[in-house]
Structures are given as C-alpha cells and as structure tokens.
Amino acid sequence: MESCINACEQCATDCDDCATECKKAGHEQVVKHCIACADECRKCAEACKSGGDLAVKAAEKCAAACDACADECEKHPDMACCKKCVESCRKCAAECRSMAA
Image 1: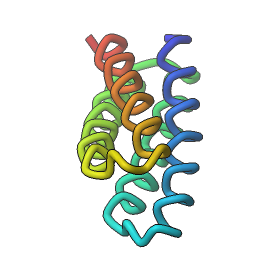
Image 2 (image 1 turned 180 degrees about the vertical axis):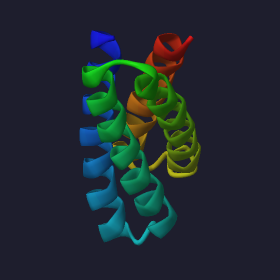
Image 3 (image 1 turned 135 degrees about the vertical axis):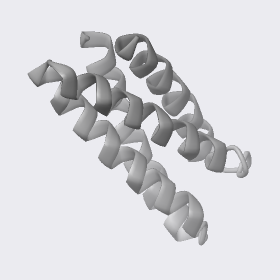
C-alpha cells in the first residue's frame, strides 16, 4: 500500500510539472491528460491512506488515467518533462494494479 501511495504522489508531482511545461509548448492534449492524471493520483493516494474498498476502485481508475497520460506524453519524445511523466505514469499504473489485485 505504501509503495502505491508513494508512486501516486510522485506521479501527481511529475504530471503537474509536465502540464506546466507542455502548456508553454502548446501541447493542450498533454496538459488535459496530465491534469486529469494528477487528480486521480491524488484521489488514489488519499483513498489508500484511508484503506478499504474505495482504495481498490481508486487504484483501478488511477491506473487507467496513468495509462492514458503516458500514451499521450509518448507522442512528444522531444519534451524532457514528457519522458519523465511517462516513466512516472507507467510505474504508478503498475503499483496501482498490484495494489488492486
């Protein structure tokens, strides 16, 4: 559970950073995905801290948001923030799936 919380918190931070950088670059789809992913990551981290059935549902939603965000960020390999975001999203998705299993 703790590794899922840590991954979610790190992913939210990386998504926020990526959204900021990509907004400057005009990559609006990335910005939308990063903001949505950061939101789901924060919700998941809070749900995991509380425990119970909500944590599993939150982890499933978070993994899906992370996958979508990583897929979008992969379209911009020239952006360093996107590379970092992809790594963070993939790690977070794996942690969430492991926790939800």
